[in-house]
Image (tube, rainbow, N blue to C red; front, side, top):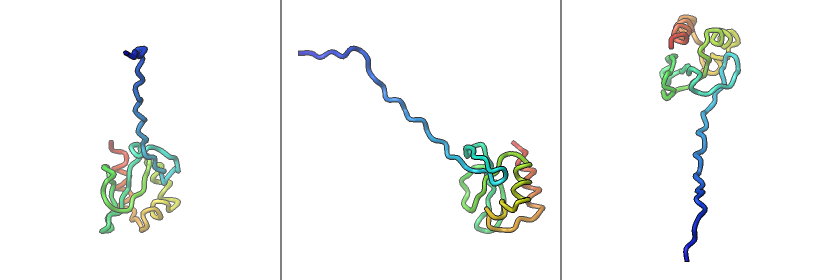
Length: 101
């Protein structure tokens, strides 16, 4: 005895991979991690931009916009997120790096 299928086979659809979201400390908008830039305080106390998103240390996320950086600094949200004081020279360097692709 033979069973025949009607020729319709259901293929399982792959579930869409969820992209992690983060909140910009400047404007407060939620965006995917890839759209934001991570500002990092390393264990040694150095503040830099983490382009890979994998360096160890305390991080805060910002939009790729100088206005968001200005809002975050003015309201002390960047300093609070990184748990340290940030000198103006470092903020200027971060602003310069933010606008670069």
